[in-house]
Length: 177
Image (cartoon, rainbow, N blue to C red; front, side, top):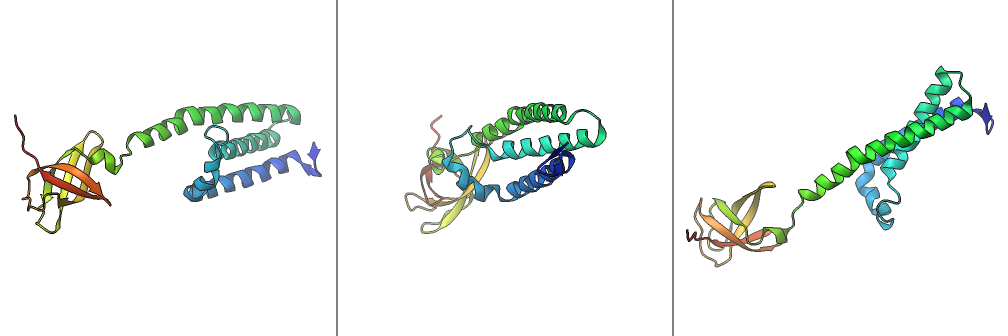
């Protein structure tokens, strides 16, 4: 069967090459393109799913046209159904869990206020040192400055009072247990 003067096998092959190429480009430049697609509400258009659908549709269509003698219309229907199923599985079992996992490990500077840490590089009166904060999400090491403008010795426990431009302002912490 022919469409637009080309055999369907050739159209599927072109679709596979173009879909695969665009998918590769999207993987490489997705951070830049996220700003372009940011205006579109979540769930309406996901470039990863669209490009995956085109690539899988073209690949299955090409393989069925090349390796079987089934009617081209039936091949198109099989390819659409197969692509829809695989893209749905990709979304449900890969993309959604990845997006949720990404959100769960993110922290902001505001989240660090009030946490208890330990000095790993002593903090001089007018200078900077380093503090390590341990928690459920891992260990965070940040530059620190004394909030009270007092020197803080190595291995002393400190309380994060404020975070300004990524620098922790800390004060010695006394445990009253």
